[in-house]
Amino acid sequence: MRNAAAIRSSQRKLIGHGAIIIFIAGVIGFGFLFFLIGRIELWPIPGRIDYQMPGTYDAWRMAHMEGIVNGLLLWLTAAILPLLPFGEVGAKRAAYTTIVIAWTIVLASALDPLFPDSRGLAFGGPVTNQLAFFLFYIGVGAVMVLMAVIAWRCLSDKNFD
Image 1: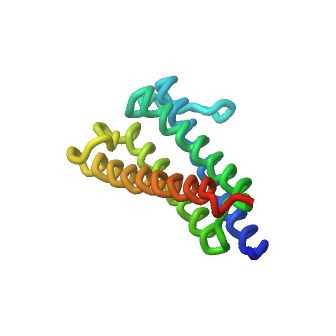
Image 2 (image 1 turned 45 degrees about the horizontal axis):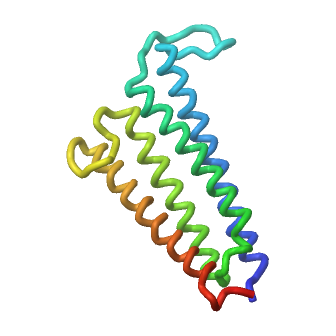
């Protein structure tokens, strides 16, 4: 039997981290906007700074979308958490694992538009690329393990009602 208060606590953590990540996606979105217009300017605030943000269109778009998607993933996980075939400890682990996945992928994606050659697709290159690589490595590895465990637990015969 699962403790409803413990599940609710995990759900609130997921929702809170999701909100922070979506907020960060909005901040990254302003960076994307400034990249697109080639200056830093926020109407009606007077003044502007003529500065071309570093990076590429694809890097900014990806970083912005990773924040939105991963924040929403945390909210979705909060919604389905009571349905997962885990006890209290398993549900808490699934919640924390999903939070780690979201943060590692969003942080790794944010490095690419800010630092040249920092996509994190392969080991090597500048330190920022290596950091992105290891963050992706953690996030992608964790998502593969978590999805395999969820699929196995949901689809095994012993978990059918």
